[in-house]
Length: 469
Ligand SMILES: Cc1cc2nc3c(=O)[nH]c(=O)nc-3n(C[C@H](O)[C@H](O)[C@H](O)COP(=O)(O)OP(=O)(O)OC[C@H]3O[C@@H](n4cnc5c(N)ncnc54)[C@H](O)[C@@H]3O)c2cc1C
Image (cartoon, rainbow, N blue to C red; front, side):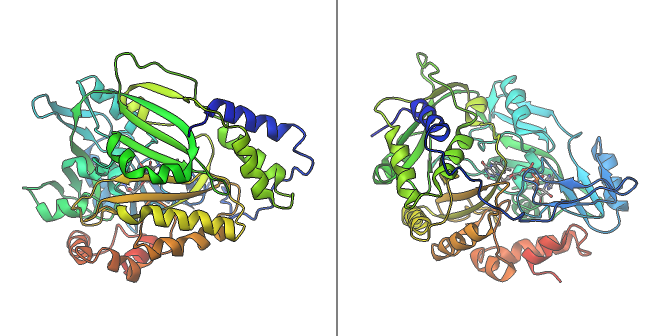
């Protein structure tokens, strides 16, 4: 069964602003992290996109090329960290010593038409990557749904999108140039420094700074994305077929409701036409509706009923265009996210348990979850290593305290052998992580220690993750 998404969202807006609002309340919240401050004359603070991580780097460097980068790396004292687009929710980036931005090392280095490969500077943002590759007839085969990341940051975290036939971004990597903490420039690939390459394909920025990356691309292509509102159980019943049938398929279950937004994306046909438009305020409207009735007894039942009231048969929004414009979605609402990667076969059971737990415990949540599928790979620290996977994410609005919600959901992920996304919130330490990466955890640590015996690239968070005192 499908619903008209525009009507649905218009309905939400109407419900939220009309007679259903007598008890409209904003949920009380306590800031989850202390706000940072700036004092003139002191180091300028850095903070991440979500606003939950910050630091006061004594030195901020943006090298314009490899020679300068290597010199600065060699001379840097204390902890050195690289920053891409600051989109990680976890404390991978913060350092109060030296922060190296790669923004000025961006653009196309070279390409090969025959093999459809291209080399780019690691500071290139994904949206620029799409545009630069389009100009040479190439495209990334798949791309995360946010195109703000830098290539270096996306690869360090094994950033992923959705599609059972596509691995994470790290799996598209053929080779890279690594500036080591001691100031060497190493070429790494399957044939040159192969162990370092294996570790550097998903490195958390712990091995040095990647300056260039060589990617296996595909010929540029166009996509059409169809969004619908459907019953979550209908989607789960039909999930194996949809994952196989579509080039990309994902869905966003609405907590405290039986509904999901589905997103099916396939190669565009010549007669595909845009239909409707994404509503940039959809999340705000959903929240307004949820909060406006939260005072009612049985609020969740009323909420679910109101959502369903706005459903109708028929197609929903359709977007069509160049691959990198269709795969990307603007994120206008700030949020916090926890995402775990699980073996594909346990995904539906895990999702059902999360949704039921939210209902049973009356967890006040309305931010949609996200369910995506990713192919297996052989990368030492990739969350997808050794198993076809699904990624399930829970989110909370950035001005609400996510902690009580995430604390109740995280143990469910553990039950299903989940590995936390490196860039998203979780509470695991080295003891738990090394069991989840038992095949190559030590291989990675060996390479890391050989490149960085002084632990220059480790901030307190990475020490915690790797068990380095
Ligand atoms: C709105 C939003 C949407 C998101 N969507 C997705 C998604 O669809 N899929 C997904 O997988 N993740 C997603 N994430 C999580 C995360 O942001 C990404 O995984 C991505 O890796 C971040 O890239 P970045 O350029 O911002 O890296 P940063 O957060 O700046 O850095 C990430 C890590 O990379 C290291 N690093 C950066 N540049 C280099 C370099 N040149 N050499 C070596 N190390 C480097 C840093 O030191 C750090 O350890 C999302 C986050 C947000 C806020």
